[in-house]
Image (cartoon, rainbow, N blue to C red; front, side, top):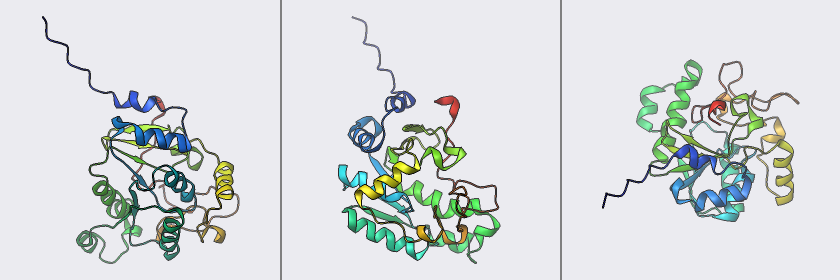
Length: 241
């Protein structure tokens, strides 16, 4: 008898497409239960919209690893909000990941790298620590939404990131601002304390400014620079969707 043909390798983009149309809790449940996606973590900035995604995860699987990138340049309010939200939701595996202290001493000794080269600063404090933290994970859950920026306008529910070699799950990709707000109200979720002070999108303290009412919520991030993403995400490619 002829030998059986070898199985075709799994097509990651085809797997990602099978989640199209799912969102919210349903998508989280399906993603965590799908062995082809591998082990999954959630990455959260504990910013102004983070509580909704974290609440959905807590309902489905509160022991799922949650990674917080502690850049050492966060507002104190963000760190206190993180601790409050973790306790409120009952999350049991929250990992605060910091940049390498030796690399900071070498590459940012005066702590002004954010002025000289903001991309390099994000690389040092976010991109590199996250890459280390995600070792061994086949996918990660993000809180990105299409309405947030032009670079996110075609964001799929699940995407394959070939540069990382893992999947990204975006449960809130299709959600509009009013749906996010409604979930906050319905669940009685605490808000980030800086939101009421004019900060609709919050990152590191040196690179985050208040936003005028009605302006793009992310316009306070890296204001005045040709920069809209920290580097841990790349724009979704509309051709591949």
